Structure formats: structure tokens, C-alpha cells
Image (cartoon, rainbow, N blue to C red; front, side):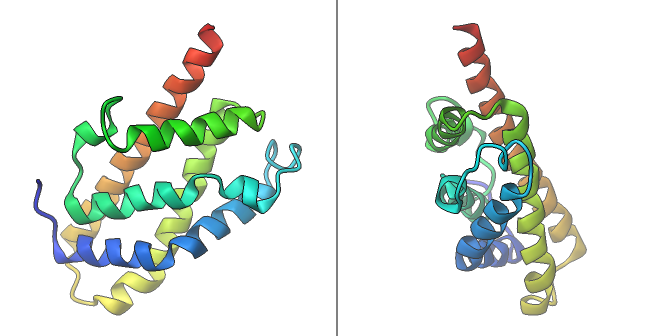
Length: 156
């Protein structure tokens, strides 16, 4: 298992602590965007699997990015596909779901920006850059798995 820094561990703890607020803020922002707004999706519908997606983020921050967890046989892949399937059942396509992950990224960074350095002021800049790189890897996997899922739907 890859080693992670104190900064990554602190970020993981922060995401665990704030996951409900991050998920709710993301869902509330989605309510304002088409096509989510056009589908008249309520907050519980929009929350979907976002809390479980945030658990993937915090686990990866804590334990390091392990690519095998994101493969079809990996422990995280099923959660990502389940979220994509839910969005498909709600009438959404891959593009808006990819944008959803962008919104999720913004909400995660908002929490990290406001809380992480206040709680962990000694965080080295290199660790913050590493945190950014790992978050990008995670969300790239979310998007890739989502696009693949929607691609299989279109191919049917």
C-alpha cells in the first residue's frame, strides 16, 4: 500500500467529517443546472451515491491511489457504476454526470481550502500539490468509468 503524508491523512479525516455537507452542497448546486433542473430531481435523488463517492475520496487520500481498486474487479468500480446507472435511470447522459464530478471537485476543494490549512498549517506545499494530483486521479477514474458505462448503454 502506498505511503501517504500527514497532509493526505488530514484531508481524508476532513472529507470524512464534512462528507454530508460536501454531498449536500454538490446536490444543491446540481439542482440549479440543466439538465438536472429540467428533470425536477429532488435533493434525495441528487444525493444518490455522492456520500459513497466521497468515501472513495477519503479512503484514497488515506491509503494512497491504488489503480486496481478502480478496475472492473476493484472495490471502488461498482460504486462508480452504480452512481452512473442511477443517473441513467434518472434520464441523464454521460456529459452532465461528468460535469457533476467537476462540481463535486469544486466542493471538495472548497472544504479543503477553508479547513485544511487552518487545521494543519504546517502542510508542505508539495503535499498540497500531491493532494491535488490524487484528487484528479480519483475523479478521472469516476469520469472514465461513467463514460464507459454510458458507452455500453448506447452500444446496446
